[in-house]
Image (cartoon, rainbow, N blue to C red; front, side):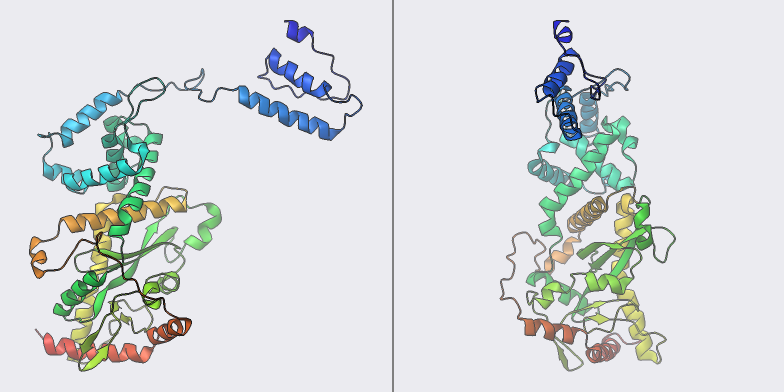
Length: 450
C-alpha cells in the first residue's frame, strides 16, 4: 500500500514497538511519532514515551464491545422471553400453577412480601428494570433477576444451578444477587434494622416483664459463618476455635425472633468479648440517645435495660448471666429460667440459617464486603418475614409494630464527663451482682417452683 511504502527506514539501535495486531495505518502512526521528533534525541526516555503512546493508540482502535469472537464460546440463546412467561405463569399470575404454600416454601416468604421487595429494588436500582440490549432484544425482567437472587440466598446454591429455570447465565445470576442485597439494604435497612424506638422499648419491657424478667430488652450472642474461600493471607486471623475460617455475627433478638442488633464482619479468631469491645450495641446508650428504661425489682430502682447473655460475657450492669453450679432452689430456678429465656437469640440464629441456606453453608465469596451485604440483607428480610407472620392476637395489646413513620429521638449529645460516667456505671460489677440477686428473688416470688 502507499502508506506502507512511504514509511522511512528504521535506524539501527531503535527497537520495533509495533504490536502484532497493528495494521499499516497503526505502523505509519508509530513511525510518524518516532521520526517527528529531533533525530539526534534517541535516548531511552523518548522510546518509552513512544511505546506508551502507541499502546494507547492501539487500545483506542479496538472495539469497545466485542461480543462473540472467533475462538470463544458463542452466546447461548436461552430464550429469556419464554423463561419469563413460564416463571410468571408458575408463581405470579392471577391463578398460578403453584399455590401459596409452594411459593412460601421456595421463596421463604409470602408473595405480597416478595412483590414489595421486588418493587422496592426496581424503583431503587435501574439494573432490575427490563431493558433492551444493543440488538434491540428484550432483556431479563425483574421477576427473573429477583427470583434468581432469592433462590441463591434461600438454598445456598451456585449461580449456574438456576440457569435452566430463570434462563440467566451464572455471571448474571451472581450480579443479580449482589445487586439485590445492596438494594435491599439501602431501601429496607433503615426500617428493619432500626434500633428500638420508645414504642419498641415499651413493648419489649412489657413482654419480658410478663415472662419474669422486668427491664430485659433481649438476648445477645454471636454466630460463626464459615468462609470457605478466605484468602490465604488472611486465614490466620479468621481461624478460631474451629478448623475452618469463620466470620462472626453478633445479634440481639427478642421473643418473636426479631433481630434488633446486627454486627457482622469480625474475624473468627475473636471470641464474644473481643467482638463486644468493637460492637456498637451500647453506642447509642453512651451518647444519651436511647429511650429511657426505668424499672423496679425487689424494691430497688434501675435505670438501664439489660440483655441476657451466656457465661463468657463480662459482669456488666447491662448483662444478666446464668449462675454456674447454683446452690439452693431459688438459684437453680433462676438459672433454669435464664437459660430458657436466653434461647431467644439461639432460636433466631437457627431460623435465620434454616430460612437462608447461604448463611448455613460455607461462604463462597472472595470479598468480605460482599459477605457483609449478603448477611445484612438476610437479616433484613428475616425481620420482614417475622413482621408479616406475627400472631394477630399480639396487636390487641395496643403496641405499634411499624417503625418507618416513627420519628427518632432528638436529644442533646452526652458530654465527655457523662460519656465516661456511663461507661463506669456500665462496667460496675457490684450493680451486676445486685441485679442478679434481685432477679433471683423476683423469679422465685412470681414463678416459684412451678
